[in-house]
Image 1 (cartoon, rainbow over the protein chains, first blue to last red):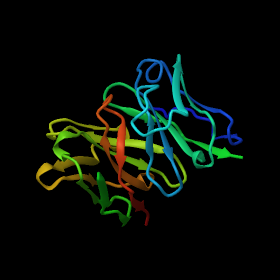
Image 2: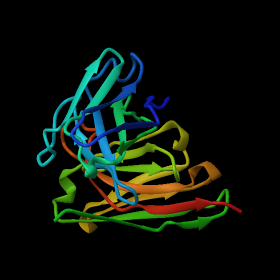
Image 3: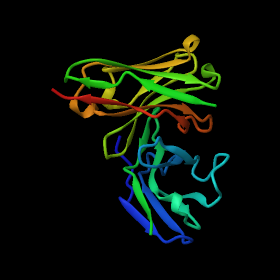
Image 4: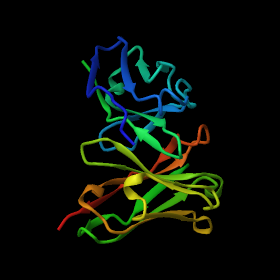
Length: 110
Length: 120
């Protein structure tokens, strides 16, 4: 299984919006609406931010939103805050009881 | 409070074995699929294996099939990962995670991880 493709870095100023892409194939992102996004601060465990492309777990601010078009999923963080600075990983179900992750994007709040 | 605490990591030579454990508390362990995810130092995440609530179904990423075995003991609220024939590329922080119950491959609670280093 090949990893999903994410840009290595993204940045934005406080209050701005930033979008992180996650590109897969027609066998994973394009085929299933099972894309998730995780936030990971240094030295911490990942935290689930989005599941099933665009659903937010309880407690996740609505500044975080997800979407998908074709083989590419996206995470948008609106109204950037300093605490949003972290690594973000996407994942997608890839069929046959397999899950693939993206390589991660380091989000910097300028 | 949900807690997942991994243990058992360490330094092992190539070809060696290691058994990771994950102690769960704060929720009904037997009601959830459980998963192992690893993270290479400085790099990304990789799903390793998962196991159904009663242990009747287990799935693995291709790179560990035949070498790793996931198991659980619901009476002890514990998840395990037996790792044999270890390779340098298995070096990573290993996390246990709880399935969130949405699609089956979303994880809402994670442990803090245990580091496995495979080196001579």
